Image (cartoon, rainbow, N blue to C red; front, side, top):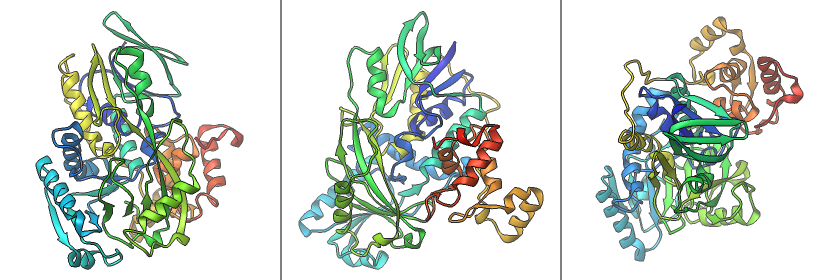
Length: 460
């Protein structure tokens, strides 16, 4: 019998687990995939939104602004990549300037700091690669984060503070029992006093197992181009266009690791597993991105990918106690990544009204990520090689990732067991050749570390 079961190990579930791990409760995270960050959290823009877009008074607005304020300190505590690079929302027509001003006023009402309206000349001075615009909204608190690192950092920290993670556990049934719930997966049954539904695209199925009032989660497909690091300085800030009912539109943005990201499209679909890219979707991304910048070097694209956003049917995050002892964290679409740390704390407040949450005196708030060898000074690199010769062997040429980093990723808390697991923890395979060179050696290291045949190593 656990105190709390969290269903889902995406960024929301891991943030909730980390927040709960501060308290003297027994927490278990059930995840249907083989690792954390296997769903929507692995394929998004990685933007830390300032909070000017959400409807005032909504959970999105409240938790977005709170999450954005937490991100700089959290990145230092948990050692993940975060850059406060600011954002611009572009207005292309004089007739849209009132809409831009309304967005500014909405941000002020939401409590966003560092907002400023700029004229065309000011925009051109700070971002010369952009096309001519009528004006823009500057958001100084906006930033970019590595979504894999954020999710993994919170998961590892939760694990080190006692939270259990069980993978390959697709929930099939939830039944009320005396004092809580029985959660049945393909591998067995787990019992808990409290259940938290953070199942992303499948949060409607989990909710509807328990609650008489159903909810619906619609997958919204977003397609992206990722360009080589040669292009990462085309713009310094995250460039948005005025938002529509389908989202914040096509962005042009550097990533936290120096690439250039273009996208996403926005298309509601039915299949919760359909992450294929489409020629039509990518063409629409190119067409709409050209409004912001005409000279995007698409000959430097190293990959394209699709993410699925979990869009709820209320227009807001669905967070709260939906049945006695059953809590939803559903419909966490954009700005869910930014909001996740605040969602975790908010759920703790709600759960604390149901069961006693006493803080641990020995909670460990910090975590050290994988050492990125290429970012060290030559002196530090040499010292690390003397200590562990595996750091002297380059495995991924594009990203300069060493065997030492890969072995760290495998052996650390909640370590990697698959190629994608290594990739998300180290960036091996994320570079220009997209794993064309390093895959065989990464497979060898995974097989050796796990004591399995090379033929048993999986991509995910």
